[in-house]
Length: 573
Image (cartoon, rainbow, N blue to C red):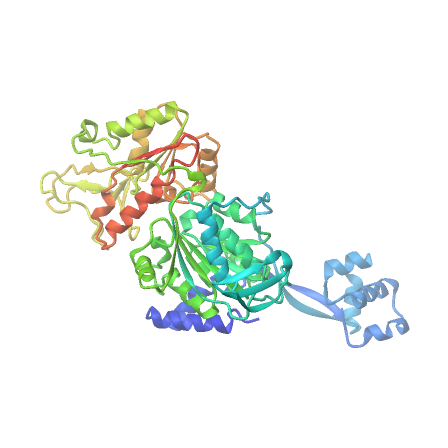
């Protein structure tokens, strides 16, 4: 079987032309290394009868054990491995060797795939009820999936009917249960449309995705759901597995063998829904029916190394070529996505309110310039400290967001005012106290902190600013008796540590969760009553023309983590 279909090869050529790289570089990215080297497989020896042996089985004069082996092989549907033959014939391997030497059976070398854990079955959940806004949005998407924006479907009667005013211009029979080997479209001319689903945090966008995918799966087709790597939380995965029979989850922590196993299952049409980060856009689904991109504004959908593709644009092109819908979901759309809707190139769908009519949490901007605690070098000012105390007193939970890992982001010379920068990237190095090193967060260059200023040789460099390590130290000191967990790429290095921390927070074993953008999205904890954004303007000073846009997106996303339960919530920025 070829690794890529003709359609996928055409798409890879488009990527090479669009992103100015070689075709080979694209193919290297599209086909995982584990697939190319067939990781997780092994060669095994199988046996089958030679020639016309089965037709003259009764005339052969053989020992009973050899006769039993031939009976097993002749009654089998194909070649069998040694262990199955010996078990069925109740013998050892000697009869096999004897038959092979006589030329009555022949060995075949075949490659066997070692299966990987797919997460196991999840507890099945029923569909959630939709409010009027959700139903209106879903109806519009289903119309596109069914191939018409004006169709009336009589599902209960097993008929479809496309109406034009009072005149029916098309009708026919359809089957809700279609064999997977013969996927079909409900109409002969499916339509490609791109939907920008703009819904506030907690508005029920994921339920819309699931309902749309259920429609596609009912026709024997597959779906691809792209999410940021940091949003691949157990909550997200559990929700899809509770609604679909076969879900493949692709992420950076998979081994080559696991990635190869998932690839084969997807290519064979055994997977209904593929959920993964940006590279999942290349999943070899044989009959793709829809692509969904959650948090379409996320910068992580853009690859930083060659080929420097953007998963959103590749998904747009793949959906166009396969004539299927594309859904871009977000609470904070990118400016280019908004522009496309204004031009009429994409369709805007809105969910302006939260499910169950819960109000959005109030957001309070706190000016800390004159705060005495901030003036003394603390990261938590008086307003935020009082807010945390109040939330904890009411048995609520707190999320503190600081998008800067490490202990102190600045090493400063008091004499010349110079700092210590990365020799490769020319950006400020960050002090990591736990490692005793200064680290570049761009290229990961690191070194011991210098004892003298590299500019004027003055000894005694000073550390300024606050990272997540320093914030954790301050929170533990100010709120003794409460469990605090820090989540950033430094503290979550061990496999499973991310899931373990979130599960402890969900159970209420952790009172305060602090971290970087790892905690800004994909989390739904009703008991969170306060979100504090520390040093909110830090990102505004990055050398990036999107700095203001991305700062707003991050704050809006993390603010949406609160106010999801009966207690409500608020945000301090």
